[in-house]
Length: 221
Image 1 (cartoon, rainbow, N blue to C red):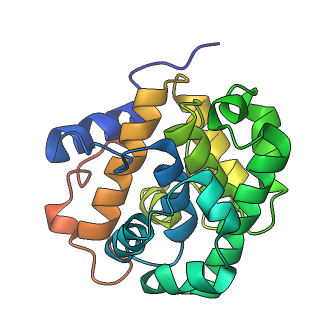
Image 2: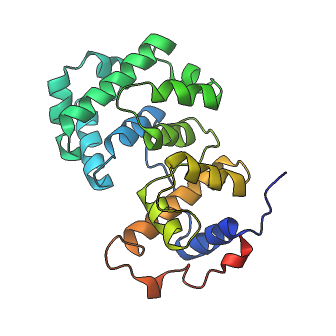
């Protein structure tokens, strides 16, 4: 059964879109840049990730073969601004090793795989978690899979639409159940959630009086 387009999850999207407008995500020039950004963005600000990616570009290393051959210590130095740089350098190297081994370094070949199959394989790459993998699938591979992050959990818990103890998969399933599988919708929705979580629905001192969702009616669920 197809989800109704008048449920509360669509209503929230419409309010956020009217409030913020299009977010133009993911901010990257290539799919490889997008993937590296997704790996680096965990536990840091996007500003720090942008600086790390600029350093990689200046080094001429934002290519699969270059990232394969670069020394881990050199890569860690380039991405130092992203924090946990030794760990993240290892994660980048792990992904590149997987891409080379399984798909001869071709992102086109990798993304031609069915979403569920590719998701399982990417989750087996050491250091890649669900949020990172789903970001890669949605933004890099144009696969209709909803990305859940800390902002999603916080906002939708506060509105009583998910539970604080729900797992990543349970929250993702809630969105996938209420929304039609649409890459553009999932892309924009996730970006809008980030905008709200960063600017208004903060973990401390949320600006509830300014929130575009302050009068949302849960009876549309």
